[in-house]
View (cartoon, rainbow, N blue to C red):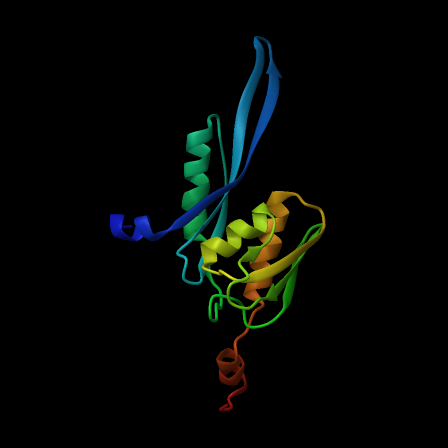
Length: 159
């Protein structure tokens, strides 16, 4: 990737977890990071990295997020219709909003929406608030969004 493309990416560290294992000399810590990355124009992905220190695990997660980015439909800085997605015990409902509303969402959903380039949206999270499953549920919900043009093309009709 060139430096010009990297500067345009939006990266948000959603969660950093610390894990400890007890060894003879004391505790040994390791870290895991959840990162959301996108181009701000409809492409967003998530990554989960593990390492013995925080910066390498964030770097690993960012690389994975950019590698696994998916295209989502963004229409006029919002989504085309209401949608929902779930992962594990987390469910997320995304509702389109008018101009000037902003991103009304929790931290995990907000990170995904801002990375995807969505500027006006209402959201509600049901069930578990674990940031890892909330991010996965949000991306699944965004993948379910279909614009009028997408539906017309899939059905083979003209609007």
